[in-house]
Amino acid sequence: MHLHSRFIAYVLTCSLLLHLGCASAPSASDSEVQAVLDVVLASLEARPTPGIASATSPRPLVIVLTARTSPSLRRASQALRPVVAEVDLAGLDQRSLPAGHLQPETLEVHGNSAVFSGLLGPVPASGTVGASSACGTHHEIRLSRQPAGIWQIVSSSVSLC
Image (cartoon, rainbow, N blue to C red):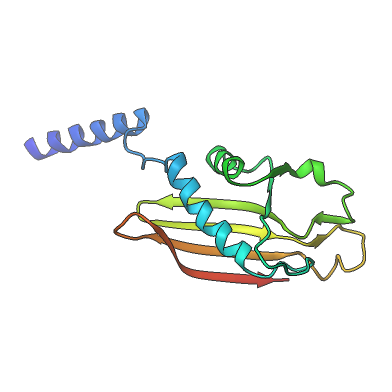
């Protein structure tokens, strides 16, 4: 009977902690999200941008924020680069996402690892020439925090459609 009582106490304690939100993993701080995004943006800007003539220095990307952009990713984006709302792009150059524009989808930080996912333009607007065969460049970038606290890219994948 003593083991049964301990089990019930354990279950009640866990239920209370879950109800209070104490058992959930802490979310990444704004400074962590900003540090990761800064590394991601520098990496993407160092690559040639489709639809834009190459220049001697990397051109900063414009970040496109959507209604789905998390608050921490929104704040980090606004702190690092020019931003525009997705709805403000309507009718721009017959593209739903112009060249040089990045639409972040997710940025998740868990301890010393992080994963970024985003879409890089150009993406033709539906109903325009090329729209059926092009939907932009999707990037997934995995990072690791080094012992000195610096974020480093450990792998990157690109998919075109």
